Length: 299
Length: 96
Image 1 (cartoon, chains in turn green, brown):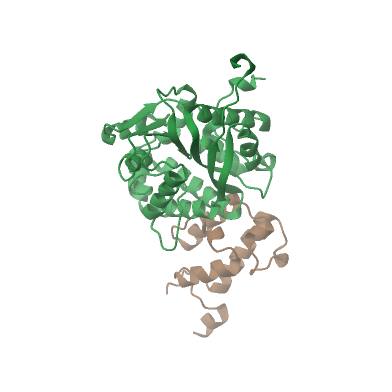
Image 2 (tube, each protein chain N blue to C red):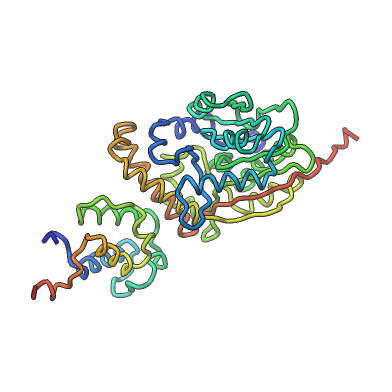
């Protein structure tokens, strides 16, 4: 068995298999800013409005408005980075991604206040601490289905400790991740055809956390300030994406082929049902950095 | 309305048979006003029935349909409202 310390989540190749499929394809069914995570819906919001509301939530929760330096772990196509340096006058917004397509896309509009890096969070070495960290929809990729529960906690703990080491005193981390819901056990979920399909055909080397994993993993590095489960908001987002995809079927098939179109249609349908039924949750957590404990050798 | 569209009753009956087969419960024990989720209809079966329904009605339907309208009655009503079924019972069709 592999040493738990050596285990990491999705490789760059696995991430690129999904996210580098085709920017034009994703543009067909995501919102205009290409935000690929669950939106925060109110009343009669459009998909665009729900995504902006979600980004604004994380910026406020992390106290990132007008901050000097903010890190975005899993920056996607850069919508949050653009918002941080635009509307929120952040002096330096740094984005990490493992997707070459996303990296190159952000490079085209970044500007002097945005730095995007094709780099895993484990390898990131900031020149100065960050005032705030935001991570939306990346945490799901930090472990795979072959991880034991204990190995998952170890991997998440490494992530939180890394964030703790990169944040200034009292800095905040605003985290969004989907997770296994409490309607069934992870062991039961892993026996389902839909779970196998998602893990093998959509998100290779990826397995979401359980709430208990996160609670265990923050111990010693972060204090929980606030947490919401907005699974129905993610269900609504998946439905909006599916409606967009089906409305652009002909263009999508030209871009990625019939088989891939059908695979994405199936994936978005399963995801909608997962969030609607409670098999999947969607957590937004606001976390405050705890002081790092000195080791015996430092004293 | 086209003659190829099933009646509301026929559609409800078709859905009942389909759901019963997927969840492996006798169709007489399934109520059409109770959420299909409660009978253990999982995402794979729900998406599969939506696909079969698309073929039956010859229209492109989302795989999410059985969770958007959680009971067989709600789903049947939606399909009638959207013009996929006639809304008439076989008896009223016969007398029309």
